[in-house]
Amino acid sequence: MFKRSIGVVGIAAAFLVGYLVANREAPVEAQGGPAGFAAVPNAIGALDVTGPYDVVADWPKDISARPGNEKWTWGAGQGVFAESPDRVIFIQRGQLPVLPQMKPAALPQIAPNLSFPVMGLVRNATQASPPGALEINGKVGDDSDAGQAGVDFLWANCIVIIDRNGNIVETWTQWDKMLRRPHSVYISPYDPQKHIYLVDDYRHAIFKFTNDGKKLVQTIGEPNVHASDAKHFYRPTFIAFQTDGSFYVADGYLNTRVVKFDKNGNYVTAWGERGNSGKETRPNYFNNVHGVAVDPATREVYVNDRNNRRIQIFDENGKFLRMWTLGWDRANLHFVHIDADRKIWVYDQVAQKLARFDRDGRLIYAWGGLGAYPGALWGVHGISVDQEQNLYLAAVGRGGVQKFRPRPGTNPAYLVGKHVYSAWK
Image (cartoon, rainbow, N blue to C red; front, side, top):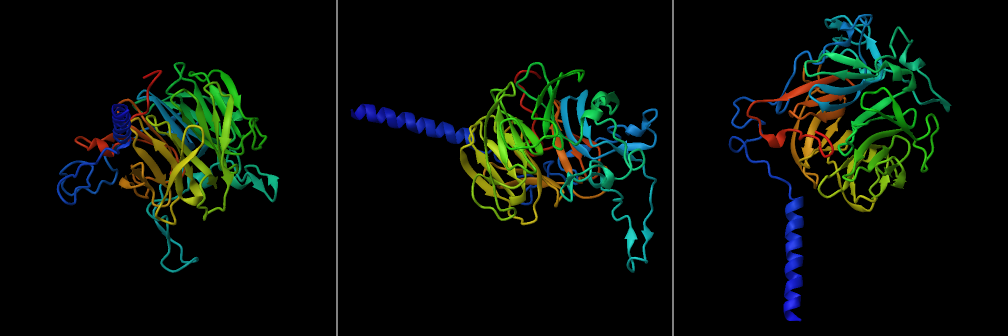
């Protein structure tokens, strides 16, 4: 009996050690001495304006260069997914007029010493891009508060495919009229056919296309009908895929739950209750579920409870495990993202920074800044990384999408890791 007990204790101890090793956060080694936080070790005078990356100039080429599109540029950049360096899928909320270069002009009629633009920021693309409000005075809204179609915006080229050189190689205009507010786009790493999933939060639906975009093979949710049941959403936002191919939908702006589907899109379960927005502390209560991610090692599900400024973590079936709250009462996260290296990334649209946290919520590194210069971050809403470690960030504020290339000699701990690749590479 004594030997058997020793054996059981030994097995338990080995299991505990294995669990701790599997869940241990890889340390970020000190760089360049006591103040060693630069992305490139021993870099002199580094401010890390674009973090561990250099922005790729003139990527993508402006869509105004396409024949017949000379007066229009990128609208609010909602999502991006890099299938490969040569095939980057970008979604936007239509297009906006090309604006002339503007020099700061005084506005004394408003206030003394006031000028516009400030920091080169002329237009907030998410305010200028359609659609308008979902509801106005209790009635379903339209695009009228976004301006006049064909003048203030153009609902076209909502899905665009871009190659490594920034060339627009495909535009899926055949789906423009079907879309209302494309919100995020994905390919499941566990799907060998590489179907493309697109979440449209105003249509309360997820559209699943063949990889070439020629065929719509499945619609999850009932378009234009919202509810909180097994067959409906209410403004869903993001998707995350589990290691068995099942997936979770953040549902969403107006529903307050996470919905799980099997790999074929069949409803499995849902969890979440409506909380007290901005001050909720109870687990499993949400206000604006605006992000979801899966840890590929533990299968844990990380949920961005946006309005309550916290990340809640659940097991794969929705059992609450733990949570951590952001220490800044103005934080407003656009997403939570976990890469194949299990590094956790968030984007705060108030600080305008992309940040890495460990799995207990401790800040590892952050970079970014507001402005109109190449590489500046403003309203980043979509994130993706290709097989060459290039980073892509779609932005609703500045509009469009940017590509970032790792700086030579950068500390890999500061890079957003690649996607999980299982059924395809």
